[in-house]
Image (cartoon, rainbow, N blue to C red; front, side, top):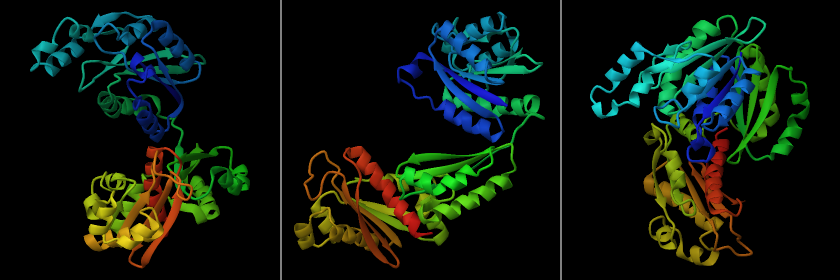
Length: 415
């Protein structure tokens, strides 16, 4: 079945709030075989909401709305939906009891505006919102050709929406709407690096043109990598896996990972599997690499720590970089970054180490070493190597790309 999402609220359209709801909902819907065709954001305006509903129902079997269900004057979604589905608001004893129970220890919240929350559209099916006062509403209508269309209205607060989806709406969909109509959707994703997207497309051109019509390939560039996602619609997973195997053979030279996970998670899993540890020595990245490596639970199993050696004094006194090399070659150089990696590996007694030293700008560049020049080194149990990269001209872009390159190169060395 095909679905659409309509997010409602002025705050989304002026950039005050970022819509994270839609991405999360899309992933969960995909897992149960509901294909998402479009996401639309609209103002808190009745005409705009009604137009979005008309357009969505012209394309989709199921529409989800988030936002505009609060008790204040700007929250008009419930009233617009009641009008759209030709019904009126009535008091719900069940919702009222839930709200009184929810706020029994907060009497200041129970006022005349809160009382409007237990007014619900008479024709709607009401599902419990365990953690909030806005009722979850399900509307249905005849979409023509004896096909029912459905609308699920949810709060816009992310934690309320997620609990509503997990506890009420996804089970309702599976039990009452999708039985017998569920279409299997299978995704497989691998990650490559070190080849331009256009060149990669040429490598895969013939294979891609021979794909069955219900299996599609998407190119998703991000952070120095390209994710290649194969999607099969209404086919057995084994058929998608067969095509995936063919694709991996074609791109094995640039393959980084066979899972769609953050690079730091993939590296952590590799290190834990090896029972190995890693440390970092950072100059231009200023601790960003360390923040990535300890971002996720369980990182203490492989990550020991970092030295942010921004000054030459720290490079020399803490990491043991030769002072003559610093003077002769400069901080952004192969000899220095090699010694940084070896120094932090020795200092923190780890199996692996990564070092970064570069010119992030906007000042400090020269004709020989322009802004964006970054040297990196990787110290391993079998030796130390270094490589120079040119990573753009914007400071944050340079440091972010440096972190990704550092992780990618080490991951590729494990393959």
